[in-house]
Amino acid sequence: MTNFNGTILEDTNYMSITNRGYAYGDALFETIKIANGKILFWEDHYFRLMASMRIMRMEIPMLFTMEHLEAEIEKTLKANRLSTADARVKLSVHRNEGGLYLPTQNAIGYNISVKPLDAAVYHLQDTAYEVDLFKDYMVAPTLLSTLKTNNKAINVVGSIFAKENGLHNCLLLNTNKSIVEALNGNVFLVKDKIIKTPPLLDGCLKGIMRTQVIKHIEKLEGYKLEEASISPFELQKADELFITNVITGIQPVTKYRKKTFETTVARLLLNRLNAAIRLTS
Image 1 (cartoon, rainbow, N blue to C red):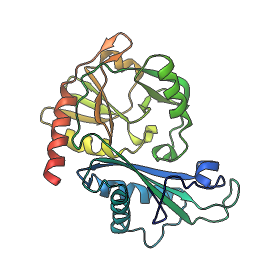
Image 2 (image 1 turned 180 degrees about the vertical axis):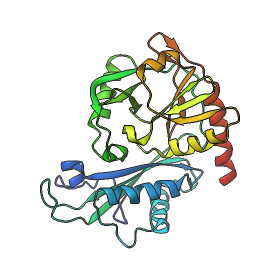
Image 3 (image 1 turned 90 degrees about the vertical axis):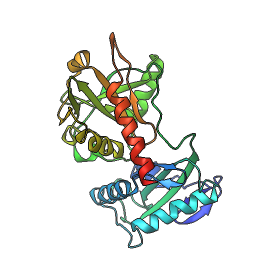
């Protein structure tokens, strides 16, 4: 069951082929984790969506309050019998149909879809996780590259490249040859007691889990956070490398080419993240 503009529809209902999200990638989305029926980090998701809609020059409806959208998510969970379960929610917003590259209007529509998840808490994956650089195409670092839009061609092609080469993920570079992010999340690098993550100015996604992890790092005694550009050459000297997103939480990287990594800081941060989730449940 899918929520389309506030109406619950069977998943057999389809959008028009002239939907601008399909035709031009003129859409935004939020991927949201539900733990025991509770929406995690909802305030961060909501304000990122509102800011992104303004950047995309979409009209924000008066009813698009935090409370209204939260109620619509809960309605969709209930329709799918997931009200007290663990789930993945995708909230998509698209500009309404009309026009070519130039839209005839800026009014929007939205849809909410849900899928069940296995667990409420985040689990550290102890299995091997190998990455490499994806160098076929690069990210142009602009404000648009920090948004979660439907324009994900580089992530799709990069994911195919990773599969073809037996990799679990790839790291994307920007046009300045700095590491921006992974195909499905933000990147953190640990060297000695310094934890680095690319700044938004480098073009990385303004990730919700990135924000959460930064908050926990700032409280981590003995460690220093740096939002600074990361060169590919730093990977060979790093102690740890991990990827963050709201569904997985923290994914440690175990191997990059001939370099292997520890998982100490990733494990510590994941424990703190889970503790914070339990306290707010």
